[in-house]
Image 1 (cartoon, rainbow, N blue to C red):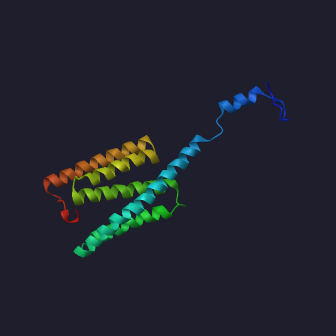
Image 2 (tube, rainbow, N blue to C red):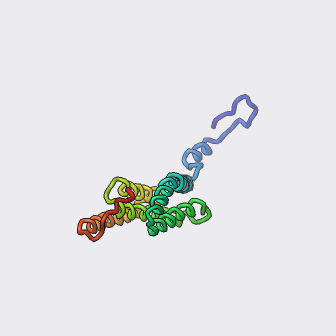
Image 3 (cartoon, rainbow, N blue to C red):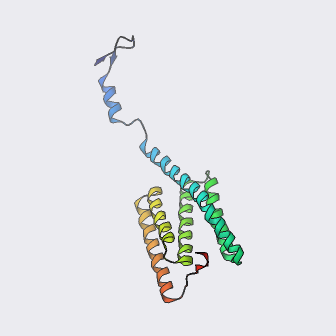
Amino acid sequence: MIRGGASGRPGLISLAVGIEDALEPVRDVVQEARELREEVLNTSLLFAVVAGGLAFARTLIDALDMGAWRIVGMALVLYGGFIVLLIGRRLPYKIRAVGFLALLYLVGVISLVTVGYLSAPSLILAGQSVLSSVFFGRRVTLVTLAVNLVTILAVGALLSMGTATVDTRFY
């Protein structure tokens, strides 16, 4: 037992209570991890909307000047998707996270087909793989890596066979 000080508070405190507090964590680390994942998702979406807004504006201006209406439509749908996920905080976490990863995948694939194997498409797909591990864990990350690998190989095969060509007007 430990005796209290001269403060006038109760003098005896059980050692068993002190040991219980040391063995049982007071905080819920699983809940903290979930909250941290959601915070990373929200921050990533905010960054995608703000930084992506600059790329979106540039792409939209160039596509409108060239009359590339398919690019205009894709850009509007993709950027609109990021905005919906950012402001849709009431949507379940899994839907928002999968939606964000799917949009990143689409941006990566479209970039691969548009500009080829430059650094941007590879970085987008690599970032998507890293974020999948943060949002969901190992299984989803392995699936994401496999899908990205197959996609890169398929686009490479299409480009090398001449079935698809890189459009450098937007680069």
